Amino acid sequence: MSAPSLPDVLGRAAGPASSRRLADTTADDGLGVLRRRDEPVRWHGRDATAREYVHPGRTVIEVPNRPWPIGRPEDCDDQTSTGLWFDATGTPQPNPDNRRASDGVALLCRRCGLDCT
Image (tube, rainbow, N blue to C red; front, side, top):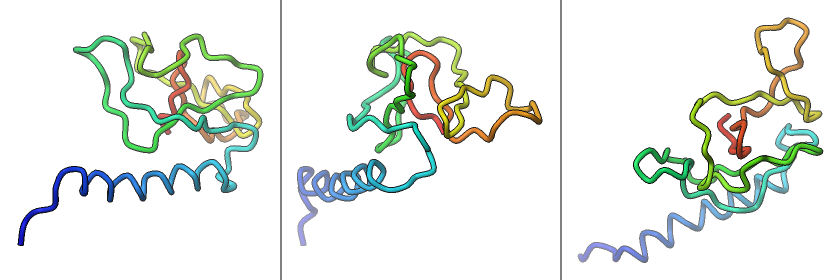
């Protein structure tokens, strides 16, 4: 029996990933007013030597009334590697240790909005 060709393997892997992305954008995922961008992300960071791997299916999260300074994770220039928590209303939660802070539902890159939760 011969091994499956590379396109066959990639096609089988892409099928479930595509259906997961579709499910992510249509299901009640607990994100409230936050919405996933329907655009696949290849990597995080524009420096070719320091690009960060992004798990398949990760997307950018759009927060109402908060445009991201960088349009795409592939062009992101964030050097801090620290994200910012947002609650389901789209309110940033800068100090998760504050007992009065809302529960964060998404940890996002401060520059491009990549979901790092």
